[in-house]
Image 1: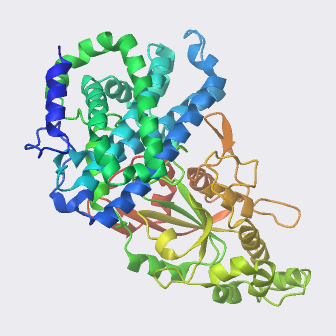
Image 2 (image 1 turned 60 degrees about the horizontal axis):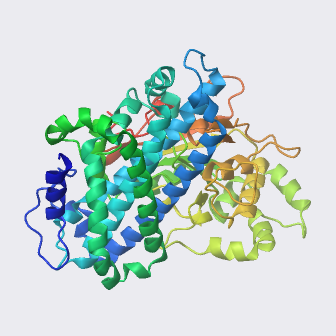
Length: 536
């Protein structure tokens, strides 16, 4: 019985609350320099805040994976097609964008799972809250990965043309070569299943501690426990159908596989690296605050920002290196400098109710409650200068939130001041709407980050705007932020160029820093793989 000694080992490392834990001997977790770099080194209040944030992320990822499964059901014929019938370019795009989205969700869940993996080293008797939260998030992420991953593996495995397509490098979708093969290897690994089954057992033992620490009073925590049971049942069902065959090959290598802890790595090195790096850098972006503030001197109202934080994607599930886009609206002082004095802006303002003299007067009169929010500084004392769609909804943010990230690019539309003023007014109109987790570009009731930029600059009778084509992602029309950079690259130096380069701050993970990049290096960024690390 191969699983029995492994099950005993895992359980020995995660004892019930009544007994102190022995020295850890678990499968190797992602390395860290010391406990000081771990999420468990946070004080209990900060740790719980981080756990709640990650719990919300797991819920979003689970919803996203379910939506992808629904999309697949509508295109199931592509997966079940006879493999001697070639796929068309459009069909390939649907298959690749769906796989890229799945890969994003799996890697993001894996990050969270590895972040809390060391709960096995946290004494359940003396550090009860951290131990309980750590297990809940680790096992919840694992079961979500397995339930959806095994379903996808079952649908795609053994189909030669499809497997070749999914395993080829696809830079525009952020997929390095061999991603699908590594996914299959980890999805069916015997150590992964051992963790599933022993985790299920430990969940029952830990229930009194979950209740004692108050975790069962958290709505999302109760949801995750229920979701974990459902996902575990689904994963077990898949494994029972093919388990013996799958494990016959994997079982012999489990004890010598040093990466067995990594369930769904996009790259082996990334899986080993990302958990450690992200834990060390919680709240510490690669771009320094001084760099962010210095960049403000080069910004103008109406600039478009593309941003990235490694291992934290605001619109996970969309392909490409750049996951987030924002509109830089600036301050009333900026408007006075760049917009209000322009004849076109003055003529436009005269047509508005009350004939305001400045853009600030118009927005304050048209949106008084929004103006009050916009006029207050952020928690760092900085003026709010950005409108972006984040999980909380379309929000006013300051440079600390919108620009203090790992990678940042700034582009400037080649438009007149009045068109930029109109775009800012459109963005103010959209502010306050919920985030669009369904990426539905045909509805204005909710907005994803790129949708805010897209609709603020959408061409119309009164403005030329910026023409950005939507693309098919997993069967739906949408706009990944990466497409904005690809558009800039494709048009650069051409007569119809719509965007100009302003700045690029390029993160360096190994140095924990960011450097200024030039236009040529920025143009190539859309080709970087999604889970890029340590650009040289």
